[in-house]
Image 1 (spheres, rainbow, N blue to C red):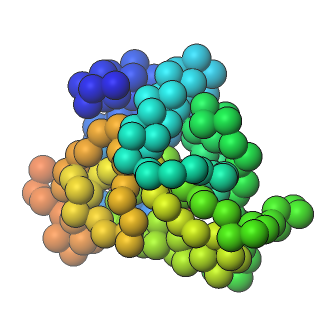
Image 2 (cartoon, rainbow, N blue to C red):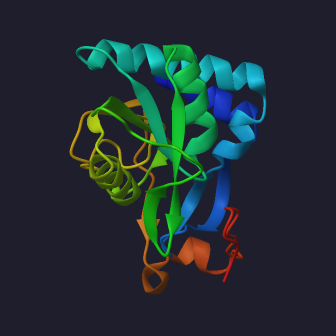
Image 3 (tube, helix red, strand yellow):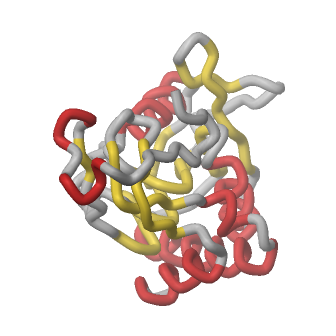
Length: 194
């Protein structure tokens, strides 16, 4: 799936927004990607996941035993990519700020794992998820996301397959450009505006 087609899928789902947004990092931006909206249509989610699974298959050498994703954003796309790859899906949850496996999920026998999430911005949550997977005995052989917002700059320690790469400009709260200063800031993600 080509970059333009991926962005069209997001726009058609009203999942690529323009305005003044506060990201979960606290940074401000003119654009926001709402993956929950793009994944709410099962047919669209399957198309995107099929394309991402194909890209992962082309970049990961050898078998893939399972997909592990960080909750909350990675759960849907991680499951759907795992379904497309024909492997089990699990997810990590934060407990006291640290990703952990719960709900009976286990990584037994040093499985070859692909970590999948929806969006990569700085790569921090990807690195944390990968460290957790390794801590539970998984061998992370690759990673995937729908959109790499860093434009390819985020370093996560393994090869990252992304359906699209965008360089979305972000601003510190004390460095918001003049054109955004009079636009009310919205935090549309799951954590709400503080």
